[in-house]
Image (cartoon, rainbow, N blue to C red; front, side, top):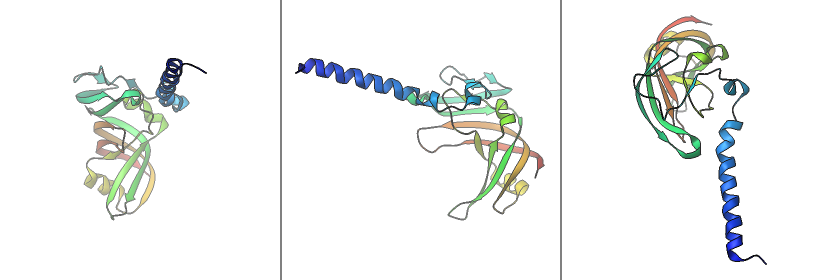
Length: 173
């Protein structure tokens, strides 16, 4: 029979191995295009107000390390970007209307992405009245090219989503 300290050492080594493997999960879950850098990835722990990433200037950075999850918090950008993708007018369970935008593959490189952020790149408009005026008030989806400003990354270990201001719709189907 093993001595108690040998069992404890084995247990600690297995825990350490499990933690190391858990830390790698975000890397394994990335799509090939994410690993190849189609979205400009930056380290939120070193990013500062005034830094510019793909033409967008960091206005504020309120993030912190959250263990193997990586950085969590909010980073606010200023600067416009023209994006193509899918818009979706949603009516939720409380009959509230809002518009989401899912960034197309050809536009991923136009938005900054925090290191270890493997979520699908989408956002909710923070000026919903303008978005509903542009896309309508019935539940639907379609393809569009839009111009946005004031992009905000919100990353947390719970439900959180990015936002942006709709400047104008260039084209919508």
